[in-house]
Amino acid sequence: MALTLSCETSTKNNDTNATKKTSTDTIAKHKAPFGIVIHGGAGYIKKGNLSDSLEQAYHDKLQEAITTGNEILKNGGSAVEAVQRTINVMEDSPLFNSGKGAVLTNEELPELDASIMDGKSLNAGGVAGISTVKNPINLAYEVMENSDHVLLAREGAEAFAKTRNLEIVDPEYFITNKQLQNIQRIKRESKNKQATFYNSDINGTKFGTVGCVALDKNGNLAAGTSTGGMANKKWGRIGDSPIIGAGTYANNKTCAVSGTGWGEYYIRGVVAYDISALMEYKGLSLAEAVKKVIYEKQPDLGGNGGIIAIDHLGNIAMEFNTPGMFRASYLNDELTIKMYAKE
Image 1 (spheres, rainbow, N blue to C red):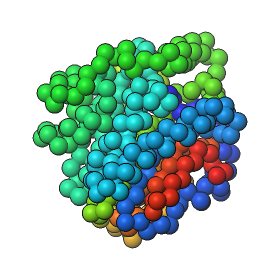
Image 2 (cartoon, rainbow, N blue to C red):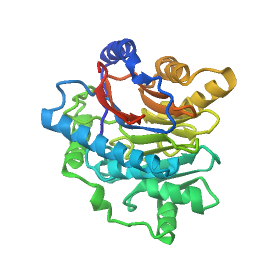
Image 3 (cartoon, rainbow, N blue to C red):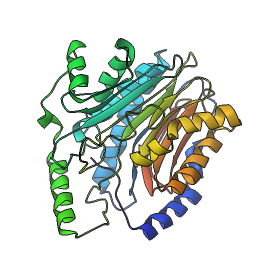
Image 4 (tube, rainbow, N blue to C red):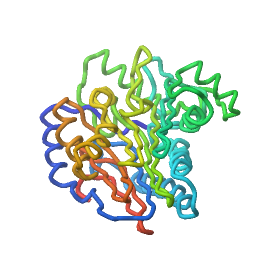
């Protein structure tokens, strides 16, 4: 399900400024022996745009996903495993723009991207443009662990998936009625040049992703991201989510990062790595690095979206320059779930 939407420049700027002033509570200065943070997409998510039942559905699924990962960490499991299994829960839900709920291309087909990175070894794996692997993050993991490569795409990635005995599905599995109606409406309005503004009921065209970052009891970090990309995308477009350093990055020296936003700008800004570099080379804290990137560097380029991150000390960040971001954290046995800016 696409989670963000294009809006007129003046509206976007006003919402961005408002968010910058009200989202300081999304930096949690805990120092936890282990922890996990997730996002389910950033965008035009405002109180009143979701029905009570839909808001509860998002809350419940975020809780299920992050609890899955937290239990793995609590029992001594690795950050990589926690990230993968947490993202599986969100990929299997039609609520999010990943896996089952992915937005569709101009040809009304799914093209899915994902990546995962191990902060201990700096090993990483990514996949792009796949349409037959049920859980793209699992294929990204296999690329990381069982290939000589970092990024595989399309038919080649799917052929590799079969050698790893991953669950293969028909592309129709990913096509929900809601997203089919969404892409048909977007194409119709684009053809008729009816609208440049999309609200939450139209399930916009640009962002929406799921992601997870984790710190395990051994001090290892990991990050992962999975998405259906941009609705109505053409010509094999690939965003930031499968690109290490853009949408996903993890390094035990600094932090683990997953982004959700307008992928072209996250690629240009090398957003996930930039946060790590600001910490490693300039000595910024996680909070300082994330805020500089999401509130200064990305808007200067023209990009918007959100970031979740956790550092090697257990400090976390959940920041966004849009009206909302589905997000949750689990630290020191304390669960936090939020959706809107003013929470």
